[in-house]
Image 1 (cartoon, each protein chain N blue to C red):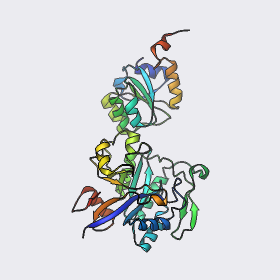
Image 2 (cartoon, chains in turn purple, orange):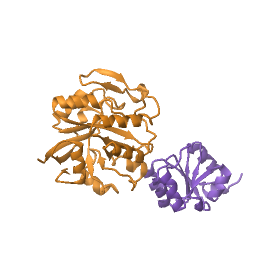
Image 3 (cartoon, one colour):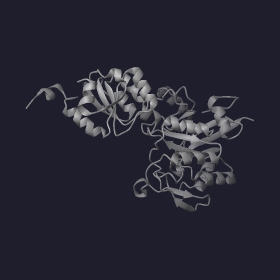
Length: 121
Length: 245
């Protein structure tokens, strides 16, 4: 699934980094403590956070993420939008909690182990 | 003439909900003198309402006190802010209060006691002082500098409520005056172990919430007088003023 598919499927608002909408999303990650996310988020993930500080873009680049999704009705700082546009990292907005979106993403097969997502009952 | 000043620039009074009842302006000053400190700063969470009483008591007993406040940004990063005069600290307080949502629940977070220098309780502060403001780090640093104060990033060695813990690293555009490390690590060790802080002046302070913790660690400054202007010179190492730890 590409970032733009997420946008369409879940009604996310694109607020920055449009040039990266064709990035492939292979998993998801939730976290607001950037020191922790920097160490643990998987490459290719869609990262859900309430932080809107510009450092989120650097963390996304460092971890080679597919996209940042700012949740809980929070918004990115102006500087963050600028940086995301420069780096081509899409920033999407979700007005509800990270939990509610993560559940939807997981149900749609994002981040499920191959055996689990391919076994149809 | 330049001489040594022993400073603990991060002390919470009984106004911080997480702080001990005994942390009154009077007792803080007494304990600081016992600990042979020359200079202290009162930095309660998002408030400066116990600063004036501590300034009066400090003047009476003979210890320099700087007005301060530990502000919590919307990123949930704690910043120690220090000012020359009480008026500037109160202006900062006005700005912080205008962007601080919520009410305190004393049973959950603790009592927030405003006291005078005679150990009399004046009132309890009803705001959610333990909470985060809606102000960004950049907003806070800008406002503090506008009020001619200084901004020190609190306990950068800690995982919680620190700039490095919350945001992973120190943002390059943040115009901090210094970083602070807790008693858990020496300044020398912190400078080699914590990525990105070696470009900043580094101080240490007790972050005391209990009387016995005051002066647990301190920063030794070489100054001509225990004032904020002198500390500012010391942080940048100008005219012989410096940090001597």
